[in-house]
Image (tube, rainbow, N blue to C red; front, side):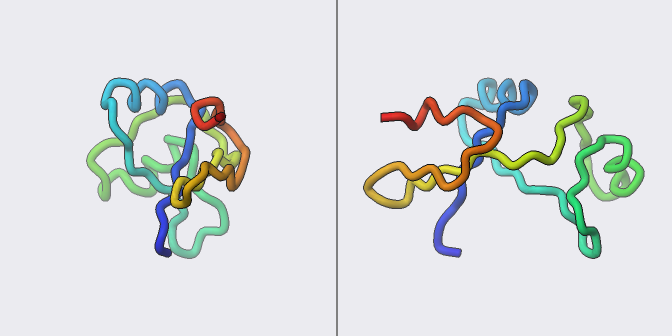
Length: 92
């Protein structure tokens, strides 16, 4: 890919992290090789990955609903996918 997708989460812990950092946060969907669905429950993530990662934050159920995706690569803002997360910051 030649572009980077911007995800706008609506989870309060993700929002708090972003507010505290005051800068973008890199993240990805946790879809392990061979799995058909992403991992989203902390207990399952811990059971499968606790020896592979330094920290697992259990912020309660997060679900796997898609996030809002915004394209900022052109001269105008383009909403690629409206999902969880407000598009208000990108409204004209």
